[in-house]
Amino acid sequence: MSPEDSDAHPWRLFAIIATASFMALLDTSIVNVALPTLSRNLGANPTHEQWIVAGYSLSFALSLIAAGRASDVFGRKRMFLLGATGFGLVSLLCGMSLTPVMLVVLRLIQGVFGAVLIPTVSGFIQQLFSGPPRGQAFGYLGMVIGVSTAVGPVLGGFLVSALPPQLGWRSIFLINVPIAAVIVPLAWRKLPHDRPQGQVKLRLDVPGILLVSLVTISVMLPFVLATSMAHVSQAPWWLMAVAVAGVVGFVLWEHREDSLGHSVVAPRDLVRTASFVFGAGIGALYFLGFAGFFLTLALYLQAGLGMPAWQAGLIQTPFAIGSAIAAARAGRLVHSWGRRLVTFGLVGALAGFVAIDVMSELHPDSVNPWLLTVLLFFTGLASGTVISPNTALTLEHVPVARSSTAAALQQTTQRIGATISIAAMTLAFYASLPASGRRGEHATGIANATYSGAFAMSLHVTEACYVAAIIVAIADGMRRTRAED
Image (cartoon, rainbow, N blue to C red):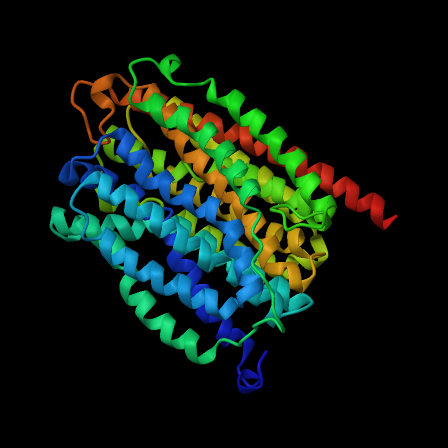
């Protein structure tokens, strides 16, 4: 911390970076509940819808590695200011979009600025806190992540319902503008400078980044294209073979470049840090099962059951409350509970999603809003004990000098999981509907039970991913126990 900022209270600085994190992560979920209205007013089709939601996560994920490295080289404060300012400006342009294609392009750019911003947050936490307070800070950050992800549909639903249709969906982007206008001046005055000493070059691993991009797009694209096709089998699933080849090429390239001492996407010291590898894997699987849930839930409640946007958003509030409560508490427990806390959280969240699945299967013609809110609250409680503890455990053995790079790589795996989740779960939902139901709005002539079946099909993706995440978490817990003995 620079001398002029040495008297700044770290928790006040945390409030600034946490607010910026809330702004960037809010955009991963607030769009979901506005999609039906947005589609009607802007003329978007299901493929546009997927790109509007998943495109943000895609560019976010593919830019994180370069952004994390740039943060370590040029300084976290400088990159934080660039990310927050750019995010606010592009949000303004998103709210002024005239066509679906224009909005898709702007969302891709918005994701890039979000990627510039987010790695600096974990880096600042590593810089400002140590010991148990660091775990608490990550706990509060997890609370912010959980709340921003879950409260987005609530806020979006009220904005869409309260404002005229043409303004309602635009407001979900414009809301970022005043937030950015407040935090940018505060960050300029308060955040500590951390520019490295001497001449340091950026040295990006461009081939490595391109290979990661190739793999991600090759996996995502078939799911997106299949949504608008008459038969899912017509999609270019052969791209999965390209993805496998890309993974092999990435591993070989990274090994070669790291052996030569060149800059790489996945440095050897991180890849050989077991806590980082296991934690990144758990985070990727968690987001692979979680990120698409609120999108398909919004489609189910609005397009399937005909709920207004405000009610569909409000019904998800208990998840946000449960997640916030648990995340704040989990930051204090992770120091003593370790990986067990994450494992218990994953098991509880899986039980919650299975219960929601069973409910939709047993009552296909309607939904009991009170039962659903209780189940969402329980699932939120469990989920809140996953994100922040896993972040702290993943980065606990990473040197501060590598913190932004490590945080970016961890966030990249999570965002890639989120991107694929949105595409896969949306496809699972729409592929279970007849063509007349693939417009993201309530369609007459389609039984509610059909929508319930589509929602249940999307939940099967969540359940499978959580089972895999639990297996990895148990394996890491056993590894840690052996290391302590």
